[in-house]
Image (cartoon, rainbow, N blue to C red; front, side, top):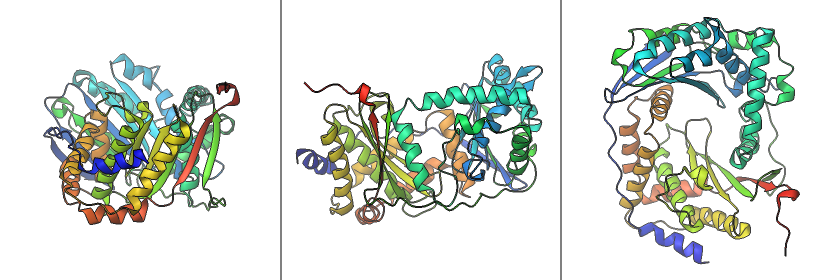
Length: 434
């Protein structure tokens, strides 16, 4: 097969040199089970702060799908000086958002240094006294409903949600991150307050700030951590059945023009000795898929926007690698080629000089850690795993230590048995055959 031959030849292609990473001044403060991480960058124009709390999907019981998102959205809807927090932040020229992950909820606050103290103060007020009244919950449900509808328009998101449900078998970490409109409708004030009280705790929480931090008030970041209750929360234990089908395939239909394939593999976590080798293998796999699919590697679009890519989700436990391609042109050929490439990686002997593969992997990592949001997330992730905050130095060191035998070993160990999701056009979206 020509595509596979081209893939093998890519082992020896020259990759672009990786850009130099920006220097940062890191510090970590530990407070009663939580951490505050600072990346002071005087050259930055903005400040970004991520607040990571152990109040994600795995803290929900089986009948609470969507409650974690409803609580987070209600905090954004909480009035501060008579104005919902999100609108108050926007009035100061900033933004606040959140993501609900398998284990955590992550708030992200970004704005100009001149107004940042005001924004942090408003966030502190809402986090200390969230509004879970019927009116606030109604606003939160409306916002979540619109956001849920938007996510269903993205086939990669649909595929990942299907796969995650089968990937996490001992908790609700794989449930839809925002819940479903029908489940959200059943939660009231008591439900939201009970979830907040049980899980918005200091234990394991991380406040991670990056940017021009010199001008913000001393202690303001620590106050965001201090407002959380003492103690730690634990995931709700759930037993989910594994897929019974030998094909390990899931299928969904959406209003999309072309089919998508999303494959998910188990992967080493951030603290594993296989972390660096998997970064190398994943970056190589993404570049190879892009070349086979005819996608320019110098495109300014994200890999998700290009419809082809490989993502290593090392920040969750268990970690996973996701490979995805759209089926524009010849779906059968693109899908078969993508899975063949993964199979070759798992069984072919990798040899030759790895310096170019390592350079590409380092460059890819640095490219994906340029924004303040990325930098705050990475530092918070490393510190939450009891690692040092200098994620760039640690990641480059892990990549540089990678050997050919490491790549062969992890390809065999991890890239063998994926779960596969196919997101297909509805019948009305398919073009009739001539």
